[in-house]
Length: 80
View 1 (spheres, helix red, strand yellow):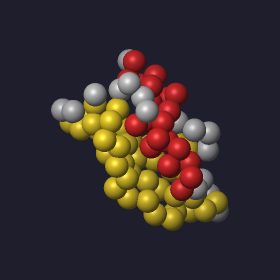
View 2 (cartoon, one colour):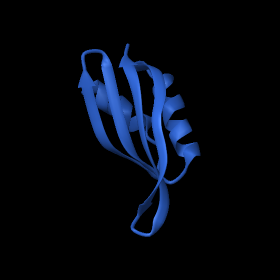
View 3 (cartoon, rainbow, N blue to C red):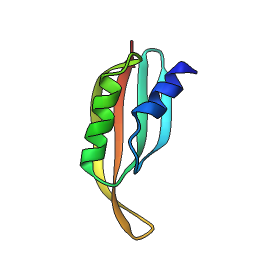
View 4 (cartoon, rainbow, N blue to C red):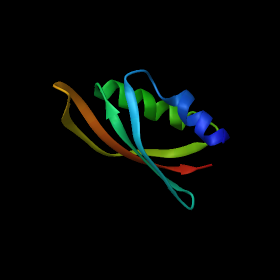
């Protein structure tokens, strides 16, 4: 459960995680953020944590959430 607490602590306001999957040491995280700066902050927070490393952005694309422009993202990382 510590990993999920770290994930929660790393998540900035106005960024929502919609997907979390682990396969061995590899983790895939997907979600929605209001802008790219929030995604960058989230990635830096994960990289600086004691649980995750090798954080890489796979997809970042414009999307529409209830009439609000946002960014859908997917990233991968590894467990330490």
